[in-house]
Image (cartoon, rainbow, N blue to C red; front, side):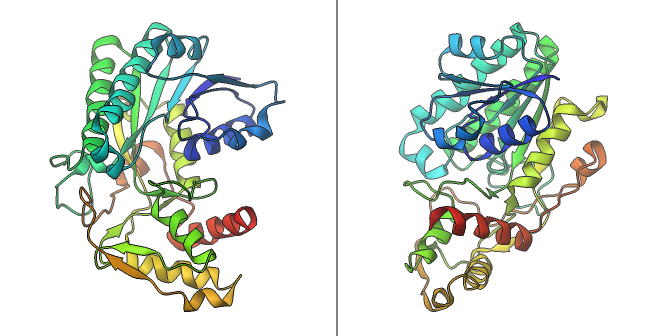
Length: 322
């Protein structure tokens, strides 16, 4: 079977991709520096002969070159996420997300990798008020993080046109699901709120709760990565795709779902209050993806709506956080 390099493979999305492709019989190499990923996410694979872990940093070109040796496909997930983190420390965000990304492109080009699929971001839409978000209409970025992810798309496009490296960018929309870390200063909203409710602590919503997001379960993201990696449709490569469900949920609605599903495990959670704080700098008000391009060119059909995804995620958190 083909060999896949998954950068950031110890992280939330990367570890789910690692598990998926190992189960399918692929050889999988993971490159991770464990700055945000966790070793325990990979523990189940250490004895698998098709699995190789390289502890390294994408900011080091030698680590990138080692990782891509004899690799057919790269699924590039390594990045420093979080808009607030990038506002607090734009330099490190740029070093990882831009310099590290460029290192991986160069290494993949030189190793004659067949295809480079990378994690892009819905933050690229910036201040565009168009809904739903369509791939070829973007605005100005609203954070250093958003700038880095847009630069990724520009570099990928140039490498496709200049060097013939096949690239596909997947603009992730608020991905959630099993293994997403609820801890730390930059935890995503779903695992953070789940943990708060499970501890009978009231979560804080930034703003009035009317901001909306296209929350996307991890299995939909795995499907998009597999389709992008393996498509033989020449019209489907060297471009970007929204990776989402095509539906939006307000933060207030999200809290309602979480309370409803969590009370099936602990009825007292229904009484936990929710608090409201100021809007967060760099946040866009609404996010809703058009997934028509992915459907038409890749054959994408999301399997999990928000309610189905949240039920699965909450089941996992209840079993693993308790």
